Length: 280
Image (cartoon, rainbow, N blue to C red; front, side, top):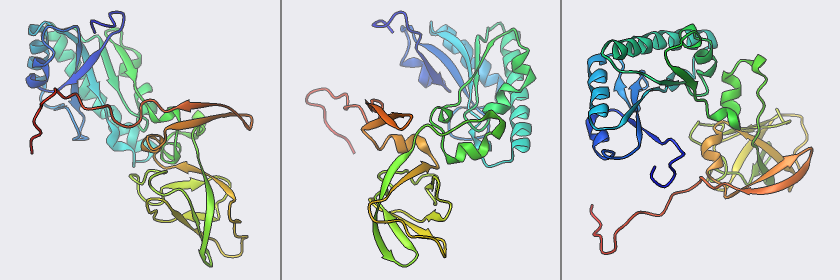
């Protein structure tokens, strides 16, 4: 914050231990509210505790920026059910905002939604009609898009995939099976099998990958792709797939325009003091 004074930097907190490390800094704080996903945050039913935590932020001399609410647990539902559940959660979120205001605390911003509940978030009237705070929806996957997100998002939004993995056929291990050089070190397997779709080839079904190879089954009666043939894969989960690559080819109208470094991938070097002792 001191180095980049024109930049606003904020952190998520869910208890007072998270506050202590930022005392005396210009860092702002959003309270992370758990909407039932049970990954991080303070449970939304603990309204009194949320109010006290906001007070603790201000007592520590930090700026209380608002509330963060990531309702990513509804991705497997139909669009109608997803919207119903998301809007029910937003009703509870607005009750928290109101409780904070009654107790004298301003809520400047409310941040909601990942990609699955993005349409639900922007259609919620309580956000669209509020003059009390700034509402921000925070979908991330829509930047590149992937097979799962395209299945979740309404088709009328007309999103298209912006990132594909190029692979080549490297083996014909037996009749009805081909193998490509796109194992889980290339296309992330965290979303399950199949890990991807093969664009333009509905007759190919990706099977369980190994580290370096992705076997595919071939439908009966269709031509087997040749060795060396190029295929384009649409990952089911693009985020960890991007993290597998050092560089990306930027293509426009079939021509490679540039090669861009994927600068956010991997890990930073550990911050260690000389002579530090490793612990178990």
